[in-house]
Amino acid sequence: MMKQQYDVAIIGGGIAGLIAAAELAKAGATVILLEKSQKLGGRGMTVEKNGSLFNLGGHALYRLGETYSILQELGVKLTGGSPAANPYAIWDNKLQPMPDKPLKLLSSRLLGWSGKIELARFVAGLGKLDPSGIPNMSLREWAEKQFADPMVRHIFYGLCRTATYSKEIDSQLAGPVLRQLKRSLQPNGVLYVDGGWQTIADQLRGIAESCGAVIATGKGAAQIVLDETGTAVHGVQLQDGELVRAERVISTLAPHDTCRLLEKQPESLLQWKQSAQPAMAACLDLALKRLPVPERNLAIGLDRPIFFSNHSAGSKLSIHPGVQVVHLIKYNLPGESDARADELALEKTMDMIQPGWRQQLIEKQYLPRMTVVHDYAHTSRSQQRPGPAVAEILGLYTAGDWASHGEMLVDAAAASARRAAALIVQQLADAGGRQTPAPSQRLTYV
Image (cartoon, rainbow, N blue to C red; front, side, top):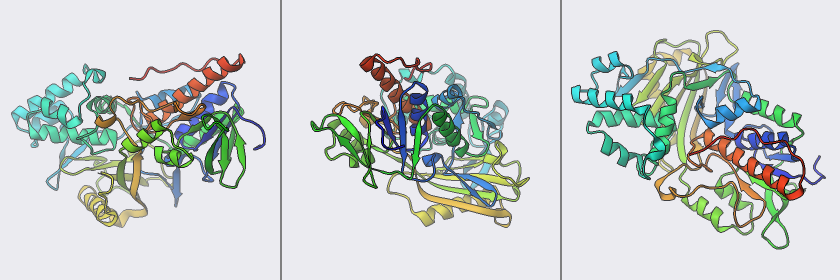
């Protein structure tokens, strides 16, 4: 298994690595995927506890996103449903109906008449808004120009946090955020996946292996080995000392981890590493015998960066009838989290939304410092489009949630994996004149 030469070695068995492996294998390339863990999925893993299924933090697919489209093309079966309607807003330690529909907007106590008119105009015009035409400005800059009413801005920022899993408004580029917001507000635009995201990872593995890809778990990369010139890839040395030979390597690791695998870091990779601004979160997932207040399935914090969602309202996440798996998240900036304080804040929020939940508790999962993404489109790198190729090293490519060309979250991971795979397929065809199947229909990214 580990002795032959491969066309491509992929480092990392998360969603990006698995999509790249499936795409390349379907196109006829010889591929090996190297994953240090014994389990595939990366942050797309799902953990089973006492019959209930917990993702590693909040996970949702956008039906208009790149990931959903790519998975459909690859033949991944996706079942599940959308989050429950009738969201609540959290403001001043109270729950109020979120003004997301005309009648609720008219009766809302959150807004005065001028604010209601302003919010109604924004919602009505959102469908016609072209995010690609927005100049390179931060989300705050854009919002300050658009909204005069402070409460409208609070509602807008709350919706943006929910769509992007980030509370950063001073550096996030407005265009990609608004593009993501439009997707999230589409009717049935969000999908919670039955069985958790492990079902996606497992299906991608099956597709890749059925096309000839080698999936090697428990095989951590120690170094990306270059040729004698130091300018081209020769293979990957594993932590056990074994050398996997390949003239092309896709690293789906974070920029700093990819740099760690190289004795000499190329300038472009160093720039991506130095400019990276990760998004962080504290995540609390609970399995409950029942919801004390069944109609409260969704709540968005307006004066705090917190979000609550009952994932069982849209998907099957337990083998036990009636058990509800719910998720709470507190969005943090890097370095600001306090694990115990965040846990107490999330539990206190749960007390407000679902009083009596502690008596219904079956299982709990708390992840105090989850990396949502390793980087996103922000003002300090507004002109950069990381990857797929690392210019200074022939045969080195990158993919992952940070290698965005305007996409966000897992859509950036999936789109960057496809970009890397498509480039390699074309290069293999050009180099040897070998007959490779035509790549699947490509998406256009903004």
